[in-house]
Image 1 (cartoon, rainbow, N blue to C red):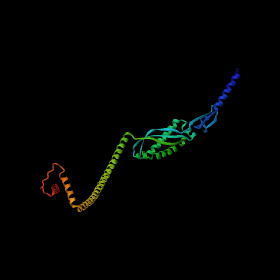
Image 2: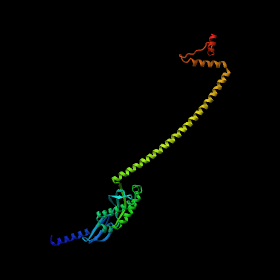
Image 3: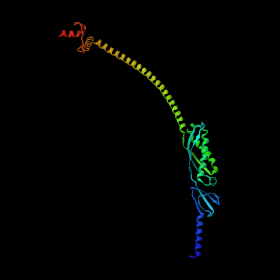
Image 4: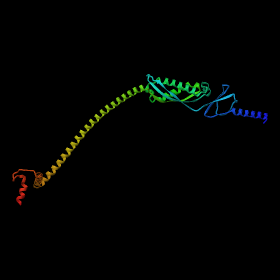
Length: 290
């Protein structure tokens, strides 16, 4: 191969390399800026196929998706100067790629550092005006919404957008935790004692009411039983009286038989009477007939 052919191949290779180097693609998940000699010439390259000047233009591509930043645990003080250890995270994304590149030079570590510092400052401000009870109460969602809004305003100049700030965990230092636990235990014991006292009073009232109702029921039952017994005795006396009036001799004989049966019910019973006693009148008459 002569020198002319070699030169032609080299030129073709250079042209092809230049064409290939001049083509670039930005995906939907990316944000990009195009630099020329270090200056931004395209501040926000849209997704798709683009061309650049080879060896002169330089493309910087960044992740345009939502990012998660774990904020390092930090100690904050509440309104009553009690320390709490807060563990939080931030959801953010690039809103203005040109401002993001200018403020961070496209360095993700620097971006996360700036965001962590500003998040810590906002958390310190918010926790500093709240009491410990408010920090651990159900108003945390409102607190996080306020922190998200203020933090988002503070990072707008960095080309970033904060979507959400959430607290994963709030811990108390050991010494504070012990004192809080002791106070809560004391309060719970006091509440338990109050419940026991109220329960004891209610139990006494219930027992007294039950005893009173019991006495009323017993008295009413005794009254009804005596009334029923009296009515039964009256009816029995009327029946006996009617039967006695119809046949006095048979009634006397029946009563004597009952008296004999009840008197001589046991073989060990002893009864001392005169032989001609009225008690044996029916026996004597029966023996006389024989």
